[in-house]
Length: 289
Image (cartoon, rainbow, N blue to C red):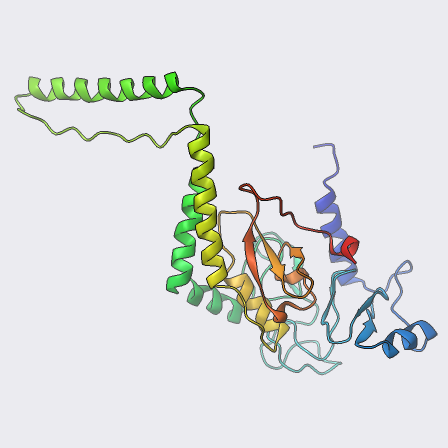
């Protein structure tokens, strides 16, 4: 394809910034500059050591340059990390990140921010445990049903629905005659129930099912907790499959593609379903500031 995919380009640039944070066009922030000291003196504020953007003092992630910035906390398990350590002494994962085996993107968190694949032992265990939970099983069923509705082609007209019913009646009649030819009296022929419906019926079915998914997601919403790392891991383990969702954080009430893009996921939040008669879309956090 000749056109440049903007999302792919942005992901590539983000990976490059993670691998090479100190580049000529984006030098590391000099902590001795007046700008740094002024920002640090502001109530509850600090600056990103990678790009210099103003951030909350207790944030572990910069939404401007999309880098994990805490040097003393493991981004995979939340354990204390010495500044000079290359690997976490608790979980053994590398400070430089893990390459996803599925989509090959570089990640600083336990779940791939692009495809959701669990990347660490803790993440895989949490992922497996979550899928045994009754709330998640219900969510999985509802999400699958909602996804199946997207594959239904609605009737264009009432005549098309009538013809569909006539075709089914003809099928049943032919099978009955064939059974009687074989000496089977009063054969039982299972009727096929068409999943097709009118455009309005399909629209209402999607709206209703999406509402049920939303309620299930509300029940699994993340409540505030101390660790941003543990919060990201929980949220990614509960991500529904088969439907388009975004992470709505309590920090800025913004929509992120995942909690991996939020500076303070530990303040709580929830997955929300996109589409289906709502106008919610994933927002660019940089433009929201």
